[in-house]
Length: 195
Image 1: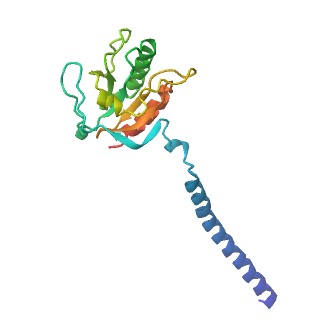
Image 2: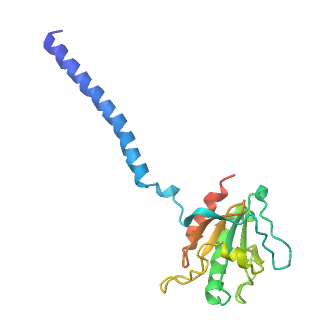
Image 3: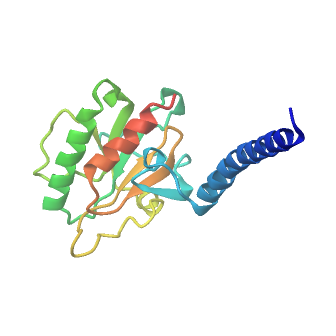
C-alpha cells in the first residue's frame, strides 16, 4: 500500500469516526433541547389541567346523601370524578351528567374502579342510569378545596368544572367548563392502567 493510499484511508476513517460521534452526541443534544423546551409526545400529555400542587382532600370526610361517610380508602385503587355544580345548575348539569355517564360506561370492566361524586342533589332531569353516581351532601370546606370551582366558564364555553381525584384523595386534574368528555375518558383510562 502506498503512502498516498494509507493517508487517504486514514482520513476516511477519521471522517467516519467524527460522523459517528456527531450522530451520537447530536441525538443527545436534540433530546436535551426537546426536554428542556417542554415538548412531550402527544401520547404522554394529559388533556385536563394538571394541578400543581394537587389539592389534598384526605383529611375531609365527605358525607353521602344517605348520611354515610364516603371513605377515600386508597387500598381499593378507586379513582373519582368529582362534579361540584352551583345550586342553580339545571340544563347544563343534566347534559354534563349524561356525558359523564357515557364516559363511565366506556371504561367497561374498569368502570367499577371509578366513582362519580356529585356534590349536592343532581338536578331533576338527571336520569338514574348505570353510572355509579354518588350524591354527596353539600360541604363548603370540600367545595373550597377544589381549585376554581366557581369558574362557570366564558360565554362560548359555559358549564361546570370537573375534577379527577386519585385513590389517595388528591385532586390531580381539573377540566374547565365546556371540556370535551373524550379528554376526560382518555386521561382516566390512562390512570386506570396504573396499579
